[in-house]
Image (cartoon, rainbow, N blue to C red; front, top):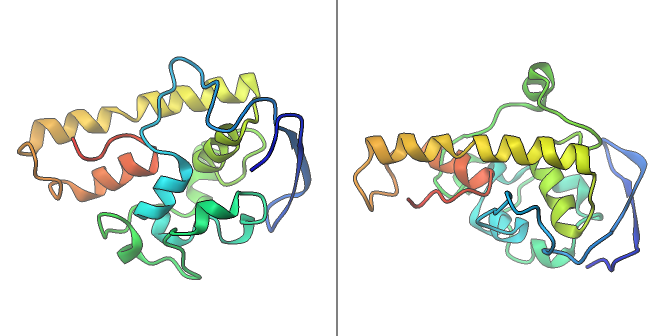
Length: 169
């Protein structure tokens, strides 16, 4: 894990010599309106992004996050917690304008870096707004599923998990 004051240098398929500063302790000092349900490590362990998300950026992230992570060389929907395909290709996200700032992989990459202690106030505010708006899927699950039936609307539940919201409502 990084320490406050460390500079992280990223060299992967999508970024070369990208640098950011760790300004706070990992997992601390989150904006008050940002309360994710899971850490990045917990998300990777439960099964997100068909196991394909962090393959070439593991050098940037703490190795302990991968101790029990469900990772694959190829996208495998069976690795998702709810067992369903639940992601669009990165090109779709780029086309929609959903890739913000220096995080070319999108929201989860931002969250990993935020969790580690990077702070970019303008980018953070935008990503937190996006995270907050995603909770609307919880309302759809509550309106259409019996309490306790965690396999009702599995694609929406997987999406909630991938945005660190509670899919077990």
